[in-house]
Image 1 (spheres, rainbow, N blue to C red):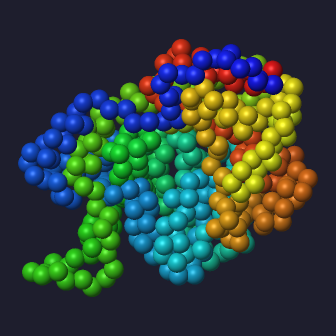
Image 2 (image 1 turned 135 degrees about the vertical axis):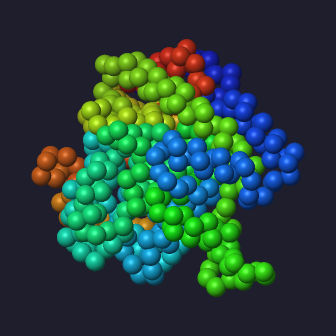
Length: 422
């Protein structure tokens, strides 16, 4: 166990998980908005940011909104979700993927994760349609910039005539079989939150190939005003449009997307090489069919190298063991020396707010299986844990992945991790 004081000096400047990287053009476009007095939710920056998104991703229409969450909310409205409707959702994701379903009164049913990409398991989705044949909407996320098996998921949705919402908030610039994520859904969403691969400090976009859908979202996002000489409202609207100031930052960032991806990939590869020989694996991807954007580099500790760790709702305890470690020990070590890591997203079916919702694994109803896993790590037919999302959450963590981290700084982070297994 690593516990020697002053073995490493704290980093003079904090090593972030993933922070914004500015270049210069962003400020010029913001200045342009300021000097032209186009400071509200119309202007050239918005038009150009939408055009650049369509050009990069390969969709016909992009609607610039205040957040990726707003884009997902508009997507749920377009899907026609009504109060009481069940909706299949990715389980291991940030709750912003799921909450918009509830905004419209829908009931999320969570689909377990698969080990190959840490994304929605197509086999579990197929099982879910057997259990809930009336479901007509699926929301799928690409975790940490890694594309899921989206062609299989798309095919399952088509067979069951289900509307597919693709949450590409974390995967802007990632490709699957030569296509950009954000083009597989009936509608899709991307995010420009402050920690994303490119940023506007906030903001997001809804992506679609349907002009009518784009026009509806533009209308809904500007308080659903009708074409009248006064403020006329015939349906519920929202204040969701992106500001021309934020759009200036987004516009300036788009030209650096590929550079950021290359920097993030180099970080992933350095971790993969530097951690060889430890009982760990990097977050996986399908190298034959996909090219992630490598937004976050993550680690999964081998099951037999995991020291004792117990998590409550808001706290955690672990017992140090020789040549073993756990996410908590590694994260606490990094924090001690001024580096930021993070636990893997806690699966939605484990969250108190959604604990009574349905949960489906590839072997069927997942609630009983989760209880079995908690009770004694019971395995499924394939010899793996019955609850894959819970297993990855217990053994995984997100590593410092900031593209401004130097190779030398990353070498120190790698050495800290290695020390935790001594």
